[in-house]
Amino acid sequence: MEPLKGLILSGGAGTRLRPITHTSAKQLVPVANKPVLFYGIEALVDAGIEEIGIIIAPETGDEIREAAGDGSDFGASITYIVQDEPAGLAHAVLTAEAFIAGSPFVMYLGDNLLADGLRGLVATFREDEPDALILLTPVDDPSSYGVAELDGEKVVRLIEKPKDPPTNLALVGVYLFAQPIFDAARSLEPSWRGELEITEAIDSLIDDGLKVQSEVVSGWWKDTGQLADMLEANRLVLEEIEPRLDGDTDDSRIEGRVIVEPGAKVIRSVVRGPAVIGAGAHIEDAYVGPYTSIGDSVRICRSEIEHSIVLAGSVVEDLGTRMEASLLGREVKLTRSDGMPKTLRMLVGDKSEIEII
Image (cartoon, rainbow, N blue to C red; front, side, top):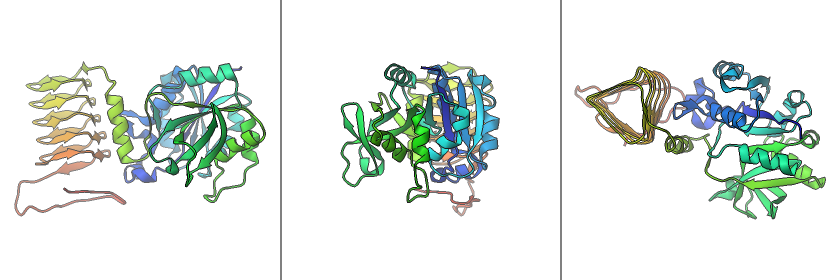
């Protein structure tokens, strides 16, 4: 089999992570201080795939180009492919046909995270040479997903959000394809959502008697499209970190697995891992609890925070209450004054969510 190419889909609007995604592509929101997209690129490179196409939308494409560059930082070569409209995963496949140029390829949704990477999947695909290999994971609510009906490892059909699911095995956002997927995608009519559905394209392969194989994911998998999933992915990635103290920790307690990046200052504070403190951050008279990622140049003073993600340049001061299970965007300022009367004064962007408890 000739070398595989990689195709990362990074064009979605990220409506479920607003307001963060009003100003930033959802694939660039960081997990453990690294953009979600970078985990996908690294997983492809780790599996021996160095020629990578990234599907981008006109609105967020420039930001993604700037973040990932030409791929040389990852040991890859990246080509950017503009998808003019969000017309479905099978439409994205057709948009990339010139880039794929006859190669087999891995399609990876750019806001997904896989614990165990892609190496085993790519090895299976090379060995068995199916026309498609899909990745499945057991879920509690299969009626919310695309679900596979199986005969052994062979896929009999895929059903989108079934009312009466035949299995609890949902499609994960990673697919490996040979060339027949292009003709299958071309044969589709838009679904009720106005999209060319990849599940229908794979069903078309099955109907034509082609070989569609499945593998159940080992380890965890996360689609980081919602806040709870983002925080859970952050927790899972932080579980794996190796402690490293490259910044200054002055009169502070650092407990458990903690990374303090260069230029960060932790003063009279407690940091309880797993946690990561970004470069140039300033933590003073504060508590940073487990499963927290503090971005670069963040300032946290006289406040408590845990199980949260705080993006670069934000300030949290004098909260007077613990902040948890939260995601703060870039350059957010969150403070509480000591004056009376005790009122809330806020400047809040479009479609924000604030819960005061």
